Length: 256
Ligand code: COA
Image (cartoon, rainbow, N blue to C red):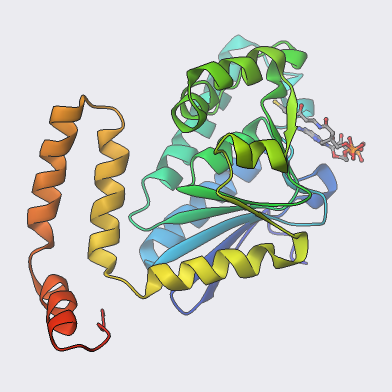
């Protein structure tokens, strides 16, 4: 395996980003976050139709922010570290194509936060999630206090964050944190199968839907549906002609 901290590979229209620090269970230190930032930028430039994010090794997706590094920080350094993590995860979240988290093992602290910055999560039957920061005397700092509540609801998010409790794949599925659970060996295939479904539809429409769903999450419903109307209008053009023309001609659409 390469000694690069983040690997980026491409298979036609689907890219895969792998956090690659398995000896430390893929823990996120500043170097990994900078490497992740660079990989996200390169991926944005290439413009695949879907990105899969996973962790190297058998045990972990990402076992959190790097505790050894944080143990030496003061408050000001902690703030900078949180801002770095938040900025990188915000750029992952803002990519104009879907990002699927394939959670192959421990996704703790920054690992759950990384998965939450993806559009949705598939978990292996080895996955464990949690925000254990309070056990270390800190709080989630890479967006977890906000994104977990938006994904699973405020009551459950508060319970998980206040206790620091780890949950397994069954509970993650039950609370809607994971969309599906599959055996470890089938995890990437599952993500690729769904990525292939996404590749077959209109890229412009998917990007428009993602943009509106991201932006609308922070707005009142009336303002959010106004954005939806604008994005709906923006769809009318070549891909909409192809999609609707193909339906009327009873043939599969071909989107470029
Ligand atoms: N930061 C830094 N190093 C970490 C880490 C983290 N978040 N998580 C794991 N590691 C390192 C361990 O220190 C260990 O390194 P070593 O081999 O040099 O001692 C290596 O990864 C393997 O971890 P280990 O704890 O031996 O594996 P385990 O199977 O016994 O336990 C976990 C797995 C995930 C339960 C355990 O590593 C853990 O609790 N990690 C921290 C989780 C956490 O609190 N994350 C939130 C941080 S804000």
